[in-house]
Amino acid sequence: MPIPMAVARFNRSVTNRLIGPFAGHLPGFGILIHRGRSSGREYRTPINVFRRRGGFAIALTYGPESQWVKNVLAAGDCRIVTGGREHTLTNPRLIRDPSRRGVPPLVRAVLGLADVEYFLLLDE
Image (cartoon, rainbow, N blue to C red; front, top):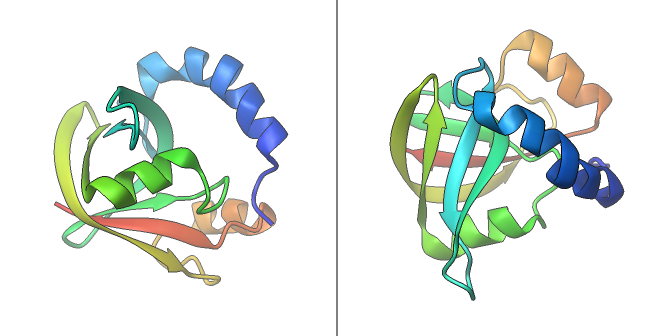
């Protein structure tokens, strides 16, 4: 079961504001830059992101129904700032991976405790 949406609302209004300025530089974190499906507005969302061969994997800690996930899937692309660099990403696809094999072992354990099984894969 993904993290409850009440936690997501708290993180959006409190935690994201605190970590936002640093997320593009911290290991395992990044800032996802995407456009709203209806508004066309640009959003910046702190995420857990991990490099993989040919692109990145994003852990969907709130599940695949998050608005930013829907925005990226609808647009077919986005940008990510991680490690202090901006990357343009395409070909988003949603996968369910209960083994969490696409992330480092320590992260795999933490995501397992939170029962996170969904990831968004993107190509660079």
